[in-house]
Length: 98
Image (cartoon, rainbow, N blue to C red):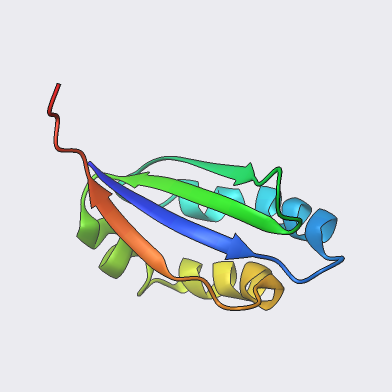
């Protein structure tokens, strides 16, 4: 399992519109092959800051399967205009050190 982590900064005053657009766009990502789950967290200290966490079965499910799909073009259309600056996307794997 791969965890995609994205720290998002939404343009000032567009937070409510972003949250509603994200709610609608969630169906896009959740329909993709290899998708496991996602959550969007709102920062308590910084207005307009969010943390998006998406679990994928493999890195390629995100970087190739989703990012190179026609569904991703719709995701971009619905969400990318809210970001300032455009967020960095990072991927993590669990080390299972327990």
